[in-house]
Length: 127
Image (tube, rainbow, N blue to C red; front, top):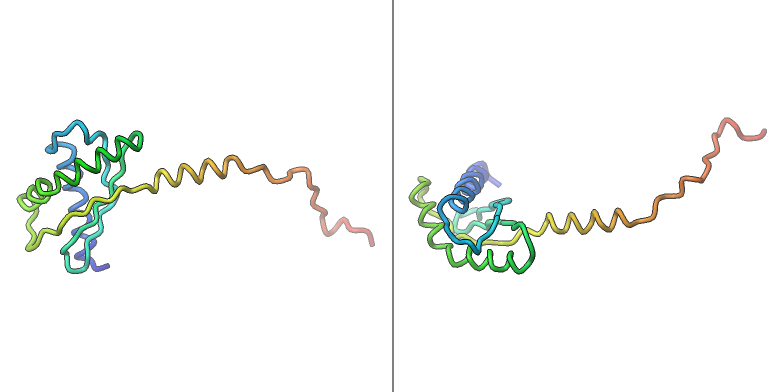
């Protein structure tokens, strides 16, 4: 990843978050967080990773809202960011937090290691 790509990713992340919070007025969107943005090398596309607070049905509704508002978000970005080319936005639901919670739950249900096993000190061995 180039410095230019990384800088554009961060600018887009910040600006898309701002647009979703203050300019996109749709109650079906719910509480959404932009977790990451990844632009392609040629800046033609940007994957926007988002996570939602709430149940899966609400997440699906939020993804529909984002996909239908893609044009508005992209045109607002073009007005606010000085770039030669504004990438096409592809919204992707970030499930890493949910996966982390599942893994944490599995780990917490694992049995404790046997704490009664006595380790023998090599110096205490019979000669």
